[in-house]
Image 1: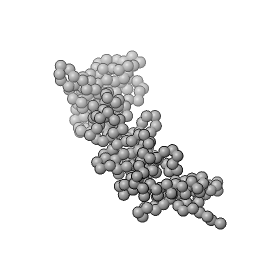
Image 2: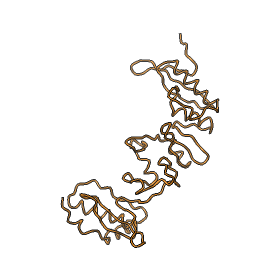
Image 3: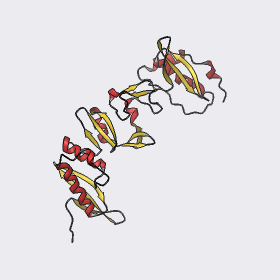
Image 4: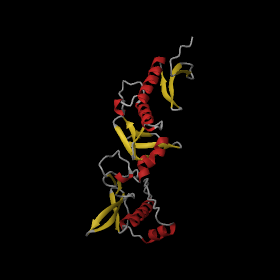
Length: 264
């Protein structure tokens, strides 16, 4: 006889073993709460979810490992309760920004204009990098804010308030936009130094503008590769000038003559 508990449905795996799914409907929204190996656990998840939705004294910080629901689901349900919008991802909306809870102790902060994107893309962490999966490819979320994969904190970019988890646009300062290009000051005038790593850092030259420096780096890469130096150099893509302007600067920009005669 089927003595199913409230909020629980029974399913079978491909090997015909049974597992239990928990779900509820709140404000016309049907919400899956997860899969469990026993009917009791599935029912307890159902009861715990209703407690979250009905008791405003239960906070995000109230979650512990002893709870039946996952932390991600805990965040989603409390946000639904407080803000009347449900996300599958662990997002909690504030007035001018939102939190994305990577873990109970790591809260990423984003501007509300990024809400749609991160409601549709789950953030993962691997090897110290934060990334999302899109069309089967992995994308470093730093790229979304103009921070390149090769960038170094406090050299190429800086989080203004010192919080490396605060991705609000006003908190991100891009210092060096391009590969191999570094701001420097000569006699009180801002210049752009270009380095290329060939058997150590090699000075390509110093240039008056960032764009010229970025193109000089690209030219240096081309020269080095023409000498059969097999390295996977990233090149700079400059959006603010036309192809003809790029070609003109490329043809007249000067780089260190030593790059034409490298021992390898």
